[in-house]
Structure formats: C-alpha cells, structure tokens
Length: 218
Length: 230
Image (tube, rainbow over all chains, first blue to last red):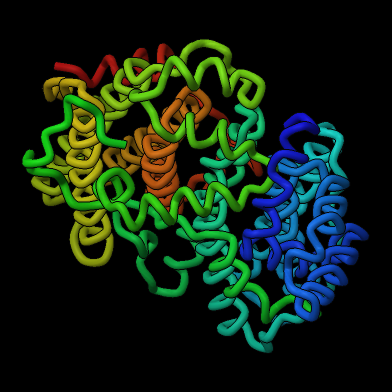
C-alpha cells in the first residue's frame, strides 16, 4: 500500500475497534503509542486522539503488513506452544512427534512472516510473552487443537483482505499447513478432522484475539 | 453483490457461498472484517468487493492497490470456479465409488463417508457460485477410478486430496472476487484436512511439502486428473 492511502484511511483505522484491539495486544513501539492514545481517547473522546493513532499506524506500513503482523503474533504463539511448552510437558507417541514436527513448521512460519513483513518495508511485531494453561499431555493436545483450528479460521478470515497476490499466496501456503496440523491433532483426540464439515469457517481478528487473548501476557 | 443476471428465486445450496454472497448480515461482517485490514484503501476495497457490477471503475481506481492491472473479470472467476467444480465432481464420484466398494468400515469408513459428503457440498456450493456470477456450471464429467484394494484406494485418495489442495492454492491469487476467494479458502483448508487425515491412514507425510504447501497450476492439475476421466 502506498502512503497516501494510509493518510486517506487514518480516520477509518481509528473507527475500527477490531484493529485497535489488535494493536493494543501487540508490544511494538507503535502499538505502545497507540495504547497510550487509546487510553487518552477513553478520557477525551476518540476524536481527540486521531492524529496520534494515524501516526502510530503509519509506522507499521499498514494493510498487508498489519495482517502479516497479526499472523506473526499467532505463529509466535504456536511456535512457543510447541517448542517451549511442548518440551515442558511429558509427551509421548504421536503427540510427541506432532509437537516436534509442528513446532519446527510454526517456527518456519515465524521466519517467513518476519521476512515478508521486512520485504514490504514493515516492522515485525515483537514476540509477546505467553502463558499456556496446560500441564498434561491431554490438556496440551486439547489446546493444540484449539490453536490450530483457530489458526485456520484466522488465516481464512484475513486472507481476502490482502492486497498483494504474493502475500496471499504465502498466507495460503501456510494456512494449508495449519489445516493439516488441525486435522491430525483432532484425529488423535478422537475428534472430527473436519469440525466445520465441508467449509472452514473464517474468523475476524476480534474473534481470534478473543480466543487467544488469555494466552498472551498483558 | 447482486448482478443483473441473478435470479433471486433460484434454489441455492446451503453453505458458506450462500452465506457470503447472499446474506446481507454476513456480507456486512465481511466488509467490516476487510475494513479491519487497516490501510487497504477503503475505496479500492469497496470497488473490488463490488465485483462485476463495477469492473471498469475498479480496474482504474484500484490499480494502485492491487498487483493486477488487468480488468478484474467475473469471467475469470467463473472459469476458476468451473475448474474447481470439475475437480469436486471427480472427488465426489470417487468417494461414492469407494464407499460403495465396502473396503472401509468402522471409524475409517465413516471418515471416508464424511469426506465424500463434504465433496458433494463443495459441488453444490461451486455450482451455486457459478450461477450466482452469471455463469453456467460445467457438466459433470464421467470419472473412472481404479478401485482394487483398501490400501490402493486410500493411497489414491491421499494423492487426490493433496492435488485438490494444491489446485485451490494455485488459484487463490487469480481470483478477483473476495466472496469467491473466501469460498475457495474455506474449501481449500478442508481439502488439506482430508489430505492430512488420509496421510495418517496410509502412513505418509501429513505435510508432504513441509512447512509451506506448494500450489499446482491448472494445466498440471488437469494433466494429473486426465487418467481419471472416462
């Protein structure tokens, strides 16, 4: 996206609570500014903070970069989930091999998204701190199912908004992997590999963030 | 997104296509969601989202916002939908024959049956989407599939589903209408789920391409399915 469209749509950014929520959950400098601005907005009314928010968002590059940063946050979470939490839990058999393989692939996604954001001139969001409420193999895998299925819906929900066909192709090649993970985990848990039947349901950012927010340390 | 050729009274398949294309509430939600993308120029998005009714305007105004400068064409989306429909017809027929073979019972049998039903819903959704865009759904091709043993069939199903997933992925960047894209994505990830499930069944990789699925273009896919056309 070119810069003039950012300026043009500054107002609509502000008016969009989904975006605001997403930005607030990030830890980047721009979102830090945004958080402060929104806090000010709560006091003075949103109209008063428009210039601050526009400025904060302008630094992220906007558009595809924001969607990619949203995806990156989810991939950070998945990578942490398998690669850090997965090693703290006594997993065995298929659960163990899935956690190991999927963890590597999620880390590849983190890397690819980071590089894509940079190639677009954007700034990758910082990795948030996570808290994973799982203490056993069964609770870990149940959460894995939630994360992977939510990941599919998140990508499917966000992808039609992408402007760049290249970025769309990248997102498509990632979501297909998330869907494969989701199916395998569901099968292992004795659940349907196709919980939405023939059509995976897209989720909005707001819905996705509501689902993963308890896992992100504020 | 109603086009002049739309017949509102025509029977429509249930499912995401109907929801995305027909349901005003969902369309608004979709637009709102797309607005949430942030810097996507709102004007460009609306033009793009309006599909065939504003193609000429869209191609000019959205030129700076999209990588494609060719006129976004409903014709192109219809061709892609009909291509997907052809693949789904074949998958539906394949699963119907597999189910009829009786090779699979119990849990695996019910999964195979589910997958077949899901391919059938894809057929209906794609037919509906083609009609909705003013096109004519392609005819159901007659398939021919080797059905010789449970193992052979499961491996063929694994191959077919991986091909299907790659076919959808290969078209994602060519689709102009956000609704059509959303539909294709909703199906794409289900094909991937089928492929992974069958991978566990035949003890092959859940993710044969590694962390990033590879797309297949139309000519590759059509060449691959040619042996299955009667």
